[in-house]
Length: 223
Length: 241
Image (cartoon, rainbow over all chains, first blue to last red):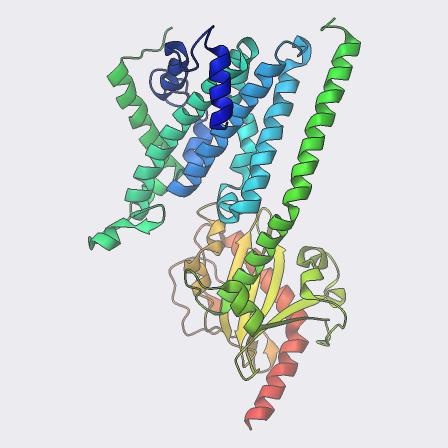
């Protein structure tokens, strides 16, 4: 959204609720911590394990998912009062697929290397539970702007975990970051840990992240 | 009203039309850029099979300057009026070997002498299609380098054909033995030394079937190019006499 449009909207909405009210800020910050889609809700784990061997594809994937979640949330939220409830899942899927294919096409046109590396995983954003979950749980019942923030927040929460995983996996698995050979440049001989490059290594690592995060914020699953 | 069948049908029709329209627009407007990427990728793979590309090399420039591309048939004769860009190797693969159109990319040095010949190959691995390029030196026998790609081989096993580690093993091997085509085969089992054998390379542990796919692909396609290779090998021999 351009700044002018944002300012204009802010002026218009000021009477009712500030654009980044405490409640709205929570929509961004909660998914980063106590409501993280990956570590707390355990959604989107498959792709989190698959695309995190290197920083670059992980970054593009995070960006792609954030865009898809935010845009689909806005679209569904704007249409929410017109969608017939009996076919709402189909409508949601159509909107999500629309954005996913858009992202895929743009990646193919402008960052071909990365799109080849991500291969099927961009297409599989369609089935990513985070996207559908946010549409059902939030966008169907809220206005477009909070829905946009909610989508952004969840995309970033997912992206954050992806980046942490990719950082550790690329640094200690291949000795590089964004393809830049860190250990070789520093002159430290380093033999990459092959386990980290395998999905199994990522799974162990993700488990550790979940453990650390939950012990910090004291989250317990309710039975 | 929002629950009536008419509304639902009209609503889904409208969504379909709008989404379809947007996608069609995106696909059409991004197509030229995507095609350019694919063509670039092709050039990069051709060059990478004969030389080591450095970061920042101008691929288009090297390609246009040094590579002469044309299409031949099974008999090794040039097919006039066809450009390699128009030949879809995946479609040619489905035809009988004798009917295939075969693109060939000759990498020439500054005095227009063929240094390497690059041949596209196409076949079937364990799960899905595999394809790539084989480059031979100016004797039209010694392998300069190979480049393989795959659509669905198992990561960590068959997918290793894409790695440089495996592709390096083909360097310096020969295709012909006393004038007859033998091709190069990937052996079963890994960790053996085949440096004395001109037609075998070390295998991939756990990916014997993908290896077989590669072997079939090479045999199949090198047979298609056999006449071309022999013809050219003959001329270079005469020239050197």
